[in-house]
Amino acid sequence: MATRHELRVRVRFFYRLSASQYFRQAPDAAWVSAERWARLTKEEKVKFPPVCPDFVIELFSTNDDLKVIQKKMQTEWIGNGCKLAWLIDPFEKTVFIYRANADVEILNDFNQQLSGDNVLPGFQFDLSKLKISY
Image 1: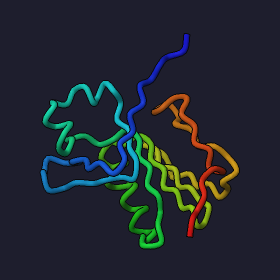
Image 2: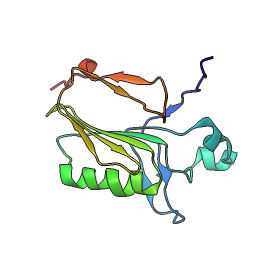
Image 3: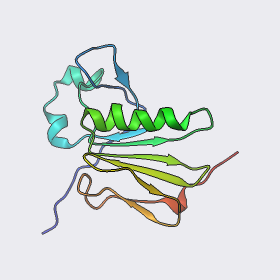
Image 4: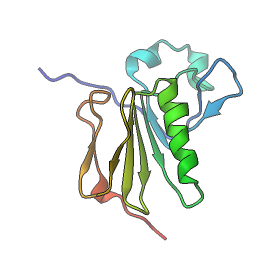
């Protein structure tokens, strides 16, 4: 029997990763499990949820510094409890996949699909559909 997962993706939504209300991050896209989201109060859901997403996507842009974004992925997302994070560089057609307790996986080919692993079972993202507009 297949399990049904409710998928809610937040785009440009700030998360409070620590007890400090001043430390906030906003990934390009993020997902928090329904179980973890249900534990938050209505007020927490509306403002800055004090939760680190289970899954994060960051898109590298020409204004970014790769080393800075890579450090952010490791320390601010994975280091705060994110289970799966993708840093997608559409210009170099490279994806850096971060997983809790694992080395970074680097893919240098956009002719494939990314998987939500066991964090988001069944979720697939076809990299070949990603296009850059100048």
